[in-house]
Image (cartoon, rainbow, N blue to C red):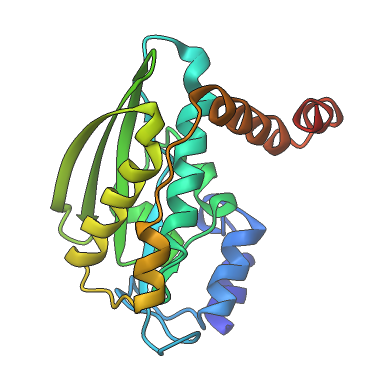
Length: 215
């Protein structure tokens, strides 16, 4: 806790926490010096510290940014279902969207030992997600893969990414957690798109954005 408070009062703004959520994350973890692979606290002390960085929109249509941001948020939610992982919140990772900071520095600020990064490319009802798991201190990709699916199978795609990462970081999965991750109903591309557009409007944190999200 002392280290987290000390970081809040550093002279250079760039050396402070990027958001209040990041500060609260550090407090909850009893923030240690350096970049731990596992933190403390929560279920089964020594949970694996993981951040899903904002995915890059590689679609030909820049208007698909809402879909890419939505995929980032849904992946964070999926990883959060694994009790052996301590997943950094969306609020804490979004300030690093399109950042030029070195990955090692981003991981240090977020206090994580592993980072998931990647891109999304959507064309009609097809979606391609490229993802990789990085060990920040070495900059080495521990795992990488590309998934090309129909949008109706987007939840199955997310499951496959999560399961691959869980295996690579040696996280434990309870039978209940595995069952929840395995549930992958097909989705209506139109309904899913409206849902993600609503999320994007809500996260704009403006009166007009919230109004559009409700509609």
